[in-house]
Amino acid sequence: MSDEFDNGVDYYMRLLVDRVPSMLAYWDRNLRCRFANRAYERWFGADPDRLIGTSIRDLLGPDLFAQNEPYMRAALAGESQVFERIVPGPGGVQRHSLAEYIPDVVDGVVRGFLVQVTEVTQLKETQAALRREQLLRNQIEEHAAALDALLHERTEMLDVLAHEVRQPLNNASAALQSAQGALRTMGEGFAAEQLVRAQTVLGQVLGSIDNTLAVAALLARPEPILRTDTDVDTLIAVSIADMPDAERHRIQVRRNTSTRTAFMDMSLARLALRNVLSNALKFSPPGSPVKVLIDDSDDPLGLVIEVSDSGPGIRPELLPTLFSRGARGSDSNTGNGLGLYIVRQVMALHGGTVEVARTGPEGTTLRLVIDQTGAG
Image 1: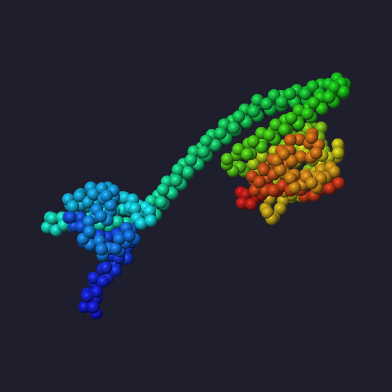
Image 2: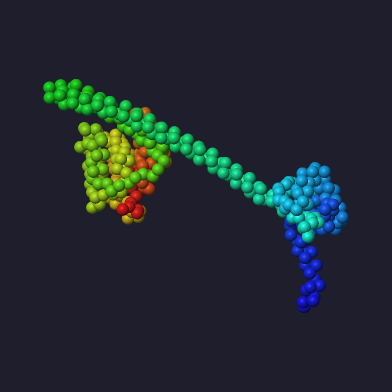
């Protein structure tokens, strides 16, 4: 068995070098081929058996030979060489390659050099793709940083607008309320009623500004909301206090749960509830009650707030887009179409929902669910 294997060593060695994809060859000091594997046939279309004794200049051609000659001379001087090169082949193919020239030194004399050339086209393409991806990632990061700066500037401008516009309007509302009280004391009933109307208009302007600022802030919000353990009764009380003084008595609150606190963003929840209450008061007959029911749900786990009015109900054609931005009734005085859109956005930020629980000639009920899954 051992003799049979030994006798076949040349066969196995030849099989090995002919099967590897890299070009393997030996060139003597005169740059004549002494050995070449089958890869030369794939790379250059040359029969390796016919290469024996031929010049490397004839194989490479004048241009490629001129590029590689300095490395050949260095190898014949006893210095190993490693370099990259694009090797042209049959049919116009261009192969990125990594070449290595290894001097054959015997007793201090260089007799020739061994050649190993490996194709790295796929590696080069992968590297190029990675560079493009990195460039794209850098551009995205730069754009994100620029957008973040713009959003920060926008937020600052909104804060300025909130202070410079809302504060004078709040001061005017307080002055009107004081004048109303004084006029009633003096028996000036008609003038007092005019002031009430002025206060109502001013309240609508404030509400519109609040909603516009809220939408801008919600759209620019880059991070998740910060929830805290909030007293539910306090939320209901401050939201009712946001309603016109003459309308607050119409709002009736009923509890159907012993839940006292819930995790939420208090300011956003107040904004949402304020819009729902304002709508309910607006679309109900004057003096009719608006009912608020506080409840909870198990699936999903959440705080439920239902607001019911005594209005004529929502027209069927409005229901599909009721919570869309800009949606409103045919009456041009029903607002800027942001209120219920804000409610939906606020509920979404809480992982909750808002829906029309019922609507018809006897009134409409909106159900807000503030998700409490994982709260605490």
